[in-house]
Image (cartoon, rainbow, N blue to C red; front, side, top):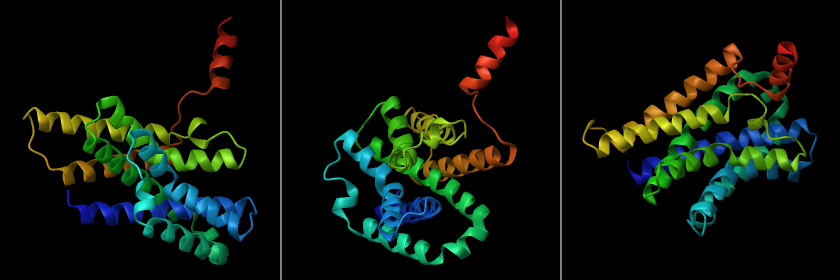
Length: 218
C-alpha cells in the first residue's frame, strides 16, 4: 500500500471522526473551543493512544500538523453549520461507520509495520478506531459509548481479525493478496457490519439483560 494512499485515507478518516466529535460537543452545548477540542479528541485521539502504546513516538499527529489543522478547521465548520448538519444525521452515521473501518484497517497496518503479534495487531486496530471516542466520553463524564451495547468496538474487532487472517494467509502462501486489498476488505467489512448493526439494532448482551435472565431462571 502506497504511503500517499495511506496518508489520504488517514486524513479522510480523521476529518470524518472530527465531525462526529464536534457534533457531540455541539449537542453538549460546549463553547467554540470545547467543540474544537472534542473534534480533535475524536479525530486524532485514537491514533495518539495507539502510537503511544506501541512506542511510535513522536506520535503521527505531532510529526505532521495537517491532521490537527484538519480537526480544528472541521470543528469550526461544524460549530457554524451545525443547524444544517442536524438534518443529516443518517449521513453522519454512515460516514462514521466508514471512518471506523478506515481507522481499524490503518491501525492494524501500523501495528504490522512494528511486527506485532495477532493480539497487538487487533489492539492497534481497535484503539485507532475507538480510542478518540473513549477520550471524548471520559471528558463528557459519560460511560464510553463503546462499552454500552452499540456493536461499535465489536465491528472494529471483527474487521481487525479479518485483516490479521488475510495477513496470515498471505504470509503462509495460501493467498496472494496486497496490503491495499487487505485495507479495502477490512474497511468494507467494518462498514457493512456497523451499518447492519444500526439497521437491525445488533448489540451484545448487557448486564441488565443477563440479570433478568438469571432472575427468571430461579
